[in-house]
Each structure stands twice: as structure tokens, then as C-alpha cells.
Length: 493
Image 1: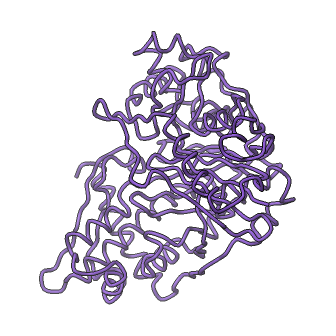
Image 2: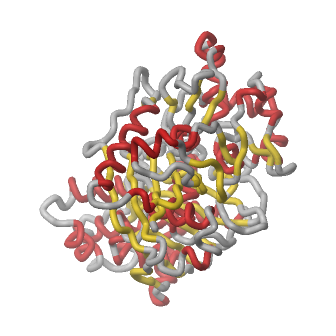
Image 3: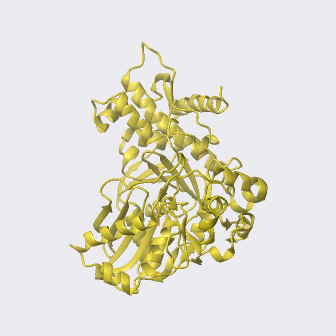
């Protein structure tokens, strides 16, 4: 018996089959084989054709069906790129391309809403600024494309649209509404006051179903097209970052999930509904099987893996990444006073949307060499994580464990040990991904797994990294120097 996990990203759609009994991945497929196109008609815009996600999904399932019996699929889970807008007409056909997560056209719309609704109400009820999220994207369409807006029957998130194509039912989740800044945390209900401010009719909302639980069932058409039995439950749905945390069994307050790809993300679970006054991090509902509400605090750092990649290309192109890691580890802790600000990939929300740029500082032309620079890069990236986690601590999140997939920056022993020591938290590395997390969630939501403990009992832990005691003092000193330089840069000094 299988559970099908679907991970709808902006670069690809990955589908995986999880053997429910063993908890192992038996097959997966990623499409397209090259990066999916993003349509950018103007600077700062980013759109995709929602139908393309379905086509990639179907391609993947068809490829898996060549070697595996899809009639054994007993549950379906969906992970998806957060904050996107899919708007459909009465025939459930998209009225325009999806405005996806990295599109920034609605920034000013959200800023106006923050002033119009009121800062205090937004922070106390939404725990966020309306920002450049789904509600503001829909308001942008209403303001700038009124003829398109008039054709909209319902609006959805990308994962909601995929669920519709599987089940013919238009639904969303409370977690999804929170991603769109349409959830009232104070009153535990939909934030209709945001819709009222934007003039968005209540009839345009999809029906709310549980994020974890049977949401709808697949149609006869899907059975004919993909070989998945009619009536298979779609029983899990979550945005990519909450799902990444779920995939790593990050469900309890104090647990953190981290990624270190091109950009870096730290996602921590808390039960304290508190907003960051400067909106440097964002709070959403977390997907969990707990009866108690759980919140996910999301921190994004643009300049992480891309900083390390830049160093590889420009400082040590002759070395492989493992060789570069080994050379960096020969430099002393703290890089002998050399430090790097890894913020050269655009404006950083964690730095109140300032674009301070990357910086290599403290160079001594006699003492410092290539190894110092490479270590300073990895330490600077770890410092940026610590900087964001300190903000999370002010919101009531006190990490005791950081979980991550063994990939990207977390392949570096130096980076892992530096981060663990800086945060005073154990790092656990696992063999999983978003599609497998969605598959586990679906089996749990369908009741096949009876508890989250059972669902994650077979999750393979690959490594555990503890803080290095003798590194603590020199790293803390280096971090405080680094932090002061960051604060001066944010002030423009």
C-alpha cells in the first residue's frame, strides 16, 4: 500500500511513492527535467501557468506507473510553493497566470493595507503585515486588472488548485489562509476584516477543510488518467516550508527546521502567538496533529548557499565542495578576525528589507589566506542564521533541536558544527524531502498511521551534531563583532 506525495515547486514538481508499511520511498520522479520557466513581463514580476504544474504532476505519475502499481495508492498529500495566487472562473479555469511567491508587485498594496487597517490590529490579529502575500496579490489584480477580477469566481493557493484537479472540489485550509495573511489568530477564524479592507467578496473564498485529514476524494477521471483508484483521499496539504518542517518531524514547540540552499530558511514551532514588531520574520499556522494550536515562525535569509557558491566559483574554483570544506576547516575558529556578511542577494527581510550587500572585512594581508576566507564565508552564513534565531527567541521560541535534510550547506561538517555551537542546539540530519513529507502526512491524515509517532517511526536519521564546547567562546566573540558590523550596515554607516 502506497501514499503519494506531491511537491509543487516553482522550479519543478516532484512526486514520490511511500511504502506505508516500511516508511521507505519506493519511487520518485521530478519534472520538468530542466528548470520550469517563470514568466516575468515586468521587473519584479513572477508568474507561472497553473496548468503546467498539473502537466508535470501527470508526467511524473505516468513515469512511476511504468514500474509501480498506482492502484495501490491509498492516500495523497500535497506540498506547494507558498503565497501564490490562482484565480479561477465559474468553470474553474484560471483567468490569468498564477502570481507566484517571488513576485513583488503587491508590496505597495500591502504597505497601504498596513496603514489602512492599522499597525496594532495587524500585529495583534494577523501576527504579520499584509505585505506581499496572497491577499495583497488578489487586491493588486482587483486594482489593476478589473476586467480579470470580475471573472474570478474563487481564488486559491497553488496546492488548492492541484487538490481541485484531483477531486473537483474547491477547498483551502486554515494554514493556507494564514499564508495569505487571511487568518485572525486572536479570534481563531478567517480574517474577513482584511478582505473587507481590500473589497474582496466573501463568496470568492474556497471552502475550508483540515490541513491534516480527509479533505476530498479523487474522481473517476483521475482514475482513468493516472491509474489512482477513484475515491482515494486527499488527506494532507501544506505550504513548502511548513511541510519541510513536518517532513522532519518538527511538530513541537522549541523544534526548528532549517534549509541551506541558494537561500536559507529557519522555521521554528511555537505555541506563543506573538508578532515581530518589525516583521523581520513571519508567523503562520503550522500543520500538526496536535489538538493545541501550533504556530510556525518563518525566517528567510537570501544570501546563504549562494554566498558559498560565489566563494567556490571565485575563491576556490579548482576545489570540489568537500575539498573546499576541508581547507576551510584548517583556519582557526573565528577565522582569525576575518568575517563575511553574506547579504549580497538582494534586500533581506531579516534586516528590515535593507539591501546591505555582501562584505569581506577585517583582512590582514599578512595573516589571512584562502582558508580564512572560506571559513569566514561559512561562519558568516551560520552567523546570519543565529541572528534570525535570536529574533525568534524574542517571540518565545527557544530552540533545543535543529533538524535538516543532509543536503546543501548541511553537507559541510564545519558549517554544521558552527551552527550547533552558536545556537547551543543539537542538529539532526535526515533522509527525506518535501514529497515524502507530504506522503507521510497523507497517510496520517487518512488514518492509516494512527499517530505522528507512528508516521515518523521509520524516518531515517543520518547524523547528529552536538555543539563543540571549545568553540563556544571564540565563536561568540566573533559573532558579536559580526553583529555590530551588520547593525552599522543597516544604519547605512
